[in-house]
Image (cartoon, rainbow over all chains, first blue to last red; front, side, top):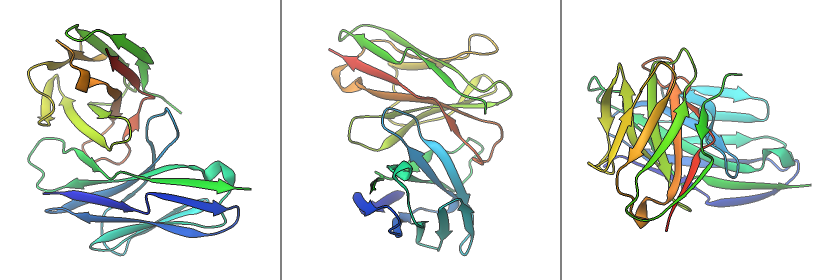
Length: 114
Length: 114
């Protein structure tokens, strides 16, 4: 069964203290791995898509990387406004002709304190 | 930036009643989805919709659920006879193309079944 596991469940950082969030996945065939940010009471907001091992993408203080078994979201010098839940999701093969569902992890709740 | 709009933001209903959740996807998008998130749990796929028909649905999406695109702009989720376990945040999403380059989510409808 396709599965996505995120760790840690919660992370508390001081402003400026860099860290990484982990997403490990078990899927029958990865079509894409997605990172989303979710603020309380809001829908997920797209951050990155990664398609193949070795791929990296960056946006401001965030950098996402992908291996064959996991992805990392690196947060460099975070600010309080980076506080949110970060969700990882995978889209798995086979691509049957339908439009495959995203399988989400439970998320990492990040709190950045001044 | 264009947005997916969902109404209402909160819906309270009695068990056994029918509810319709409404969404206006981004105007040039072709693929539409419903996801839900029970409090404290993962975001779960319900259904995808393309070219006026369901492309894929999850085990959750049983005969009590239906989707419709009644006109060129709205996308609805109907639950015929609500159960207590249907209480959740329901997210509508849309995407432009077949690949999940960017799935835009709405802010959700919080459904409470009493």
